[in-house]
Length: 235
Image (cartoon, rainbow, N blue to C red):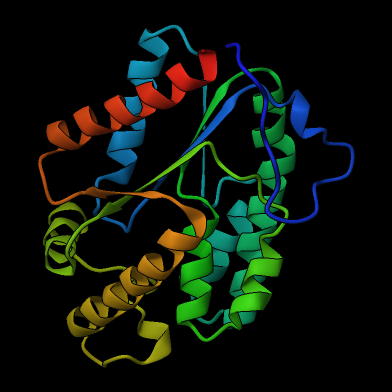
C-alpha cells in the first residue's frame, strides 16, 4: 500500500507513536445494534482480503485488559454513567495502543466495528459534558473514512426482536429513565443517539449510509466508497 501517510490524532498523540509511520488505513463503521453494521464489517473484510489486503478487525469490548470485566459489570445494570464511560475509554485506549496502531504501522487495513463516535454519543446523551467527552477520546486517531449506517428506530426494533427476541437494557436507554416501557424507551433513546450523530456529522466529516435497504445494496455502496479511499491513497 503506497501513498502519502497522513495520520493524525484528534488531540495529543500517544507517546512513542509517529503518525507518519502508520501506512495502513483505518476505516470505521458506526451504527446501532440492528443496523447491520457487524454484517457489513464482515462483508468488507472478505472483499478486502479478496483484493489482497491484510485486514484487522477491532470493536467495542474487545480489549484484553478490561473487556471481560466490562461485560460482567454491565450484566447487573448497576454501573454509574461515569464508571461506564471510563470502562469503555480504557477498552478503547488499550486497543488503540496494542492493536490499532501496530496494525496500521504494519500496513494493514483496520476495520472498526464502531469507534469513539458511538461512545461519545452514548455519554453525551447520558448527560456527560461534551468537552469532557471530547477530551476523554482526544487520544484517538482520525480515521481515513467513517460510515454511519442510519436505520429508523422502528426498523431497529424489528431487527433486534428478530435477532434476540428482546431488547438490550443499555441500548434501550433504560438506565436514564426515558420510559418504564422498554419498547418506548428504545425508540426515544435511539432518536437521541441519532440526533447526536447528526450533530457530530459536520464536525467529524463521516458519511451517512441509508441502512434501511437490503444488506446487498448497503454492501455495494460501501465497497464503492472504500475502493475510492484506497485508490486515492495509492495514487
